[in-house]
Each structure stands twice: as structure tokens, then as C-alpha cells.
Length: 393
Image (cartoon, rainbow, N blue to C red; front, side):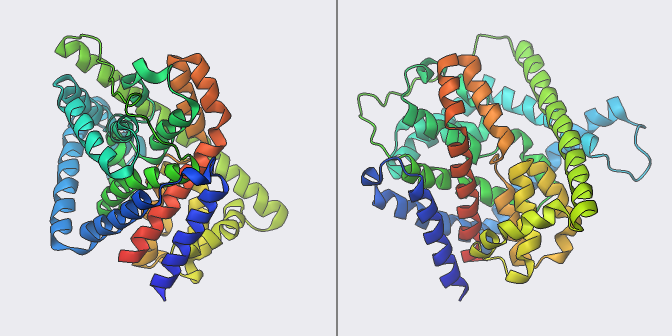
């Protein structure tokens, strides 16, 4: 029965993507089916095999160790500010982003990241039926972040037609930055974070290939990656330290605003209607939770978490999930956790449009015009990932 529901869920997601398709005649079915099979195989490998368990434990241990190193620096600067036994979110979850950002900078400076991004991107282009630039951009988005990735393709940005620009932006919104993966792992199980990152990559290609199908001419598909400005090693360190700190501050500021706003809205709705805003949104999103494989008894609670992620951001939703995680079955918890690991929310529209506009004002305006379509597609990617995980759990 669960498999039939998962198949029905896949058909619903594909139908919703078809509704927004710009040209249904150009959709390439074969690459889509191959990528769905790859998603299921990878999810099964990571969640249901001994190899996957060892791999995820290794990755989790690496990030755990990195967070310990990061906390050495945080404790040196902010030690004594928190009460004994307390675990302030800003100190323990957000500030370690600074250290992860430094490591990304070092790997970027040593040309290790560009090599990996180009190599994996070229390999993916053989599978997904899309261009080399699109494949590279998806990998780069997951490694350097949804706004920073556009700097690496700055040379090609101005010449890109709207349909290719959409795919680049969709990849950036469907993935998450490596710099905040450690923060996610403090709130949800690492195995779901790793699985979501991997299958979202293919999910982004699948949904974009339906919503925005096109064929790239080999003559147009030249991968030109913007080299970083020549910097000394310590100049680079200073830049990435400040970039990491900016990300931590921005995420912290957004959390203060969004959490406070949600509390105010919930309280207002409870006073007027006797029910919280999140509960109402839970009922609206419950059908989506059900097609993702979440039991009906848990669908409203799951829908509320999903709606919170879309309206605010994944951090707020993950914080809410940690409060009620014990009320969910392991299967439902896994599906919701995977759904939450992406940048698919309203604020990301502004972040991506702003990043592109900072590099090319004309293209930034183009991105702003298809912003809602971007969010629609990225949300379908998250739903698709949840369905794929429901098949193997």
C-alpha cells in the first residue's frame, strides 16, 4: 500500500510540474526516469545499507569534529556568556558557520573545490541531458552557497537566455550550502541531511527539466568559470572569516524576526479564531504530507512544519520540529527531515535575485520576474525528495 501511495505521489508531483511547464513537447522522458531510479537507489544505499550507515557516520563524525574545533574559537571569544548547562542557538549552531566558511575558502584557494565542481558537473551532464553549465552550477551551489555560486559564472551571466538562467537559479534554491550543513546536523539526524543533499541535486534537474525543458547546443555549452581574484592566503582567510560571520549574523537576524513574527501571528489567530496560524496551515498542507507518505494521523502536524519552512525558512522549521519530534513516527520524521533540507522559501527569492542583480542588473530583473515560479519548482523538489525517501524507509 505504501508503494502505491508513493507512486501516486510521484505522479502528482510530475503533474504539478507539467502544469507550469513552458513547453511540454520538449520534455525528455528518458533522463527523467533514469534520474528517478538514481534517486531511489542512492536513498536506499544511504539509508538502508551497512555501507550507507558507515558513510553517513563518517560524514557526521567529520562535521562533529569540525564543530568541536569551531567551538574552541567561540568559547574563547564568548566563553562565560551562557549559563552553565545552557546551549544558546547563536553560539552553538550559528557561529560555527564561521569556521566551516574558512575551510571552504581554503579548499577554494587550493583549487580543490573548483576541480571537484567541474569534474562532478561534467559527469552529471552526461546523465541529466542538460548543459555542462547547469550541471556545474548545481554542484557549485551545494558547495559554495546559493548567492556566491553566481560569482563563479559571472563571465557567462549576461549572455544567458532566461530559460537557462531559470535552471541555474532553481538549482541554487533546491540545494543547501555546505557551510551550514553542520548547523542542520545539530537539529535533525545527519543521515537525513546527507540523503537530502544528494537526492535534491537530481530532484532539481528532474523538476527543472519538466517546468523548463530545452536543449542546449554544443556550441553554446562552453563552461567558463570565473577565477577568484588573486589573493594571498591570509587575505583569503580574512575574507572567508568575515563572509562566514555575515552569514551567521544574517541567519540569526532572520530567525529573530521570523520566530517573533510567527509567535505574534499564532497568538493573534488563537485570540480571534481559537486556533493557531500554524495549525491552519497544517490542515492546508496535510494533503501534501499524505502524498509524501506521512500517515494521516501525523499529516496536520507535519503540514504545519512544512508550511513554516516555506513561509519563513528551514532553520525556523527545524527548530519547531525538534520540539515535537518525539510525537512523530520514525518514518514520518525521516520524510519531514528530508523535506526541510533546502532553501525553498520566500526569502530565497530575494536572496537569489539580489545576488544576480549585484552582478548583472538586467538579469537580476529577469530572475525577480520568475521568482514565484522558482519557489514553486523548488518546493516540488522538496516534495519529490520526501516521496523518494518514503519509498525506502
